[in-house]
Length: 185
Image (cartoon, rainbow, N blue to C red; front, side, top):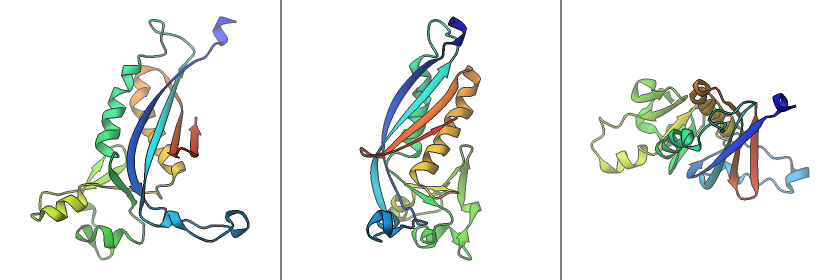
């Protein structure tokens, strides 16, 4: 009977971010109107919860909670107080005009990060207002919906945690206190 046990731990994280769901469409039979407010530039106080599990304990634990400190650092430096934009968003050209060539993202003007996102190179900018405009931009290759952000974060955590031998069972994401998404393995 002991061999069938599964242990699960979780840790929560908070961050502020902005995004735009440019692909949003509503069915008026369910939404009751056609107001596409998520198409506007807007922000949230997001909350994440990461669930780790194992069928065996090491030193009496699935893993130490401190083994997720790297994630808090990553979250703070990557997404906290940043604006997440899809490179295919029709507003990309306007919002990142210094980083566009022929109405497309000029990848040579961005840093690519192994976790699957881009940030603008700032070293050629001299104007502090332009630096402030662009330093908070995180460019992804998907529409930054709750579901897509959760799936992306799950992959980031899975890639890092696999060396510890624990399963990243799921990631839950609250875009608002009342709107929640969960992606499980």
